[in-house]
Length: 365
Image (cartoon, rainbow, N blue to C red; front, side, top):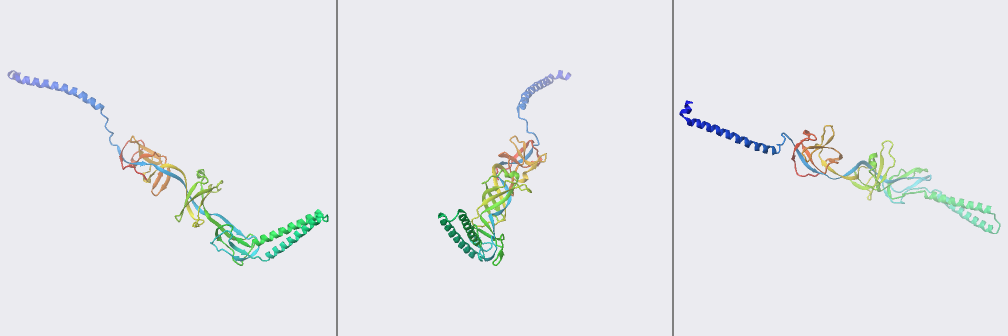
């Protein structure tokens, strides 16, 4: 106290410092209140540690669904030429594998006495005709009864039958092609003896040609007659035709239905029995072509793809396969545009909030 009495200016200085400190503390408190209010109006900071995933913008493209089968080629029709008389083979015509025209000689059988039998039947026919005419003239004069005339008419018709039979037997000595085609087999040679019913040749009609296959019970209802189809042979050749047959009855063993596709074969390049792949378009839908590496499993073990929605949350879509090729797989029943997770899909689940990183601009297959 003696110090403050001797030097009062020190006391005045301390009082001034204390008063200034009190004033400054009040101003700081008032300024702190509006600062707190502005902080409350600011947006909340982003959640820390969001998983970054790489996304690829993808666009769906029109895709044609197809029924793909394994089939084979077959001739349009096949005929077995058989002997209708007992005779010796006198001459052979076309060779095996040759292309023949309708009416072309395949083989000729020995005529033997068939020409003589025909002449005999023709002579008998003339006699019966003369007798019948004479009976009718006498009947008009009252010298012949109706019974006698009927008996003569019966003999006349019998003679006509004998002539017709002799003509047919003579005609059957020539075995000719019933239509244009290819002579596949000819098991007889000159000098062979054939009996009625023996096979003499097999002929196929190779234009048009057929592609045959089998469809399942579920595929059959998607087909209709006249629908276009394409076949690719093992040689790489492609042919296009229309469905001409859909079986109305399933095979008892396989429960499949036979189908036939008629294709043109003007130059005879197609051969019967060749393996081919048949493609029959059914409908056109939108689909995405992606790499199989982008597929992943969800918690239930279902295979699908993970995408990022507009809210940056992960969306899982079940994979609906349309086709698998060397270039990738086609998936249907997806949005036409989506952000597909290309890197990091194994670290996120459906519903997770992520930070997407765009991989590239819009891509297309």
